Image (tube, helix red, strand yellow):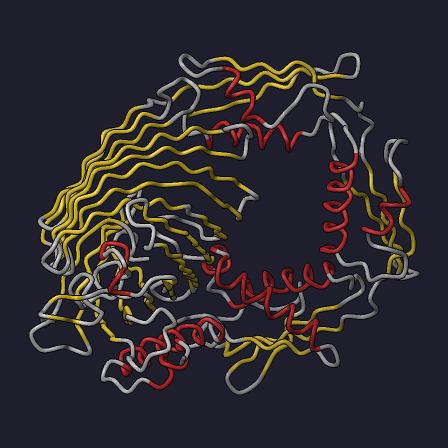
Length: 619
């Protein structure tokens, strides 16, 4: 089987120029970011400068970097018109940079270049030059000898193991670099917070230099503070939420080592319940080795009515309605009732979520739904009920396992077949993206495996598996482009494609799949209707540009197909679509309008274009 990457690299369709153009634009934007320091004379009025520093390119690059940053961001410096004032201000910047790198005996001489000759401008001896006379500034830098650390001392509470801290701090003989000293302060603080139970952790440093010896000394200090444990924990302000539920969500227990960052995390855990709008913590004074912690919360309104409207050329208008109660049993249980109605699909469902089920990291979800579909590929009526247990392994890793029963009447060949499918879905997900409805950075990978048993026909048993991944890059350049890429694949093993229930086959095409083609039509076509497949592949590349804060422009290329063979070892290539879209960014999600064109248009199957309107990005 040829890989998706291989297909993308060798496809010979007209749309490949679109994809190539998108990639070239992105590369150009990225390159623009790398060379942003290039001056365009007629677009800025900054005075050209040169750093004259011999034999130390690393220090020269650091000075240039700091000076460029100040020229870009410092409003006071931007307002200076007198070259002498600019030179004096920038001389201070260079001297600060030199000191931060350990060069305390450095000298910086300023040369104001004029048309025809040049004049040395010592710090207090230069005469003011008119702006028109000066063509550039030369900063002649003599860094001198770099000061080194001769002594490192610790003035910390006696319980702290100083020998362990010596491995995470600056050491004798190292250059006296300010950033390394600050990093050492944070490293000491982290080590103390990790290993000890101090009520207050306030690490600072004192430094001195000996100019005659070109040496420096540092003392890391922390005021004495008692080590304490967590005492009584209380929560107030809630009206309908069960206090025991909130106490379990805190992640704090009486008697454990007191750490202020765990108190901050407890406040965040309260907000993450989506039941409280504010959460504050009051830490009492230490008494007999313990501190009491009182949390004050204010409840949010727990009920929400939801409504939405969308449109797709292949589906027509659709309406969604819903109602949600996030505390229906007073312990964070969420009941979500939702419905969606369109010309080809109608469904009503309910989902009850029970948080912290047997463990703070678990969620038990019960679901039930009724649905009806009237598609070109099949017609079906279904009743579904199921349950699953989700577990949060870490901030990024989640997994779930459960069981589901679906009774369905499916008609795809002119006759109606009856199925009673019992399935056991498993899922693993890794997600680092920054936003659910508008991701701009990060990546995610999802894997699904579901064994199926037909309780009405023991011969129809199969395993359905799929995997998908997406990745997002945002560049801090003009129009803040986001490059979004997605790939998906899946297969069904155990039963031939024609023996599978039609509503369990894979289908490709439409607004959330390959834009430009009618919904679910990228598979074998028989008598004008799509058959669906036992395997599928999809790939998408999208570039999103921001125009101001509220508007956006998108270009995209999608490809995919649903194959009859489960192994995907077929000669059928992916079919491709491309297009443009517009975004209007609201406070909660972007409103999406996409216009897709089929690049492999099939006679009597595909239209010239497809239009999609919905909420949230395509992926």
